Image 1 (cartoon, rainbow, N blue to C red):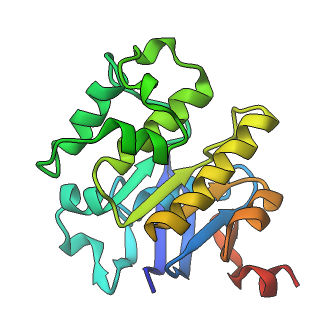
Image 2 (cartoon, rainbow, N blue to C red):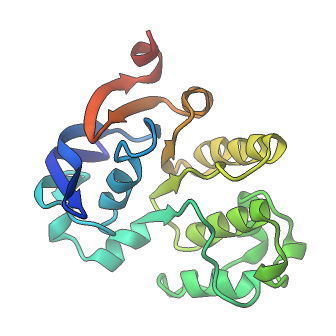
Amino acid sequence: MLFELDSVALHRGGEPVLRGLSTGLPDGISAVVGPSGSGKSTMLRLLNRLSDPESGSVRFRGTDTLDLDPLELRRQVALVPQLPALLVGSVTDNLRFAAAFTGAEPDPGELLGLAGLDVTFADRDVRRLSVGEQQRAMLARALATQPDVLLLDEPTSALDERTRESIERTVAGLRRRLGTSIVIVTHDPAQAGRLADWIVELDRGRLVREGPLREALE
């Protein structure tokens, strides 16, 4: 398994968010689905130590994440948040910031191409990008760290249908072209059906079902 969660519990503001959650995510594209407040985004943040469990354990390729250096883990397991959070400056400035963690100089044309943007976006001020373009720039910045795994938190929730379809094609293409494993959080079961090989469904911090997508849907 790529990730394994064993009896994970976590509270926020005194309220339980995850309640003894045990599940696993294999290599490939996995979707974590469920209604708002089910604990999806909290689970995603546990996978690269933006949060740590209060009890239970999270393992990445068999190693407890608490035994891994957070910065190194986040280089390998890159998270693209739901709301774009780009640094002030150009798109290339953002790519260079991320690539500095690997000690490499980024190739803006290659990274932007993987994220579905052409090289003309490299010198654009991020404040002049549309929401969809910002989301793609965030994806390119995550790819600049050369991650093994991408974590995508509701990557199309604020986008129109046409842009959503384009982002979905980009996500599917990354798996084919790079072999990168992807974990996508979505409130939309139809989106999970279009993208994922594996599904984990949560409700009120508990596991509802998990498994290969086709079997889970059946």
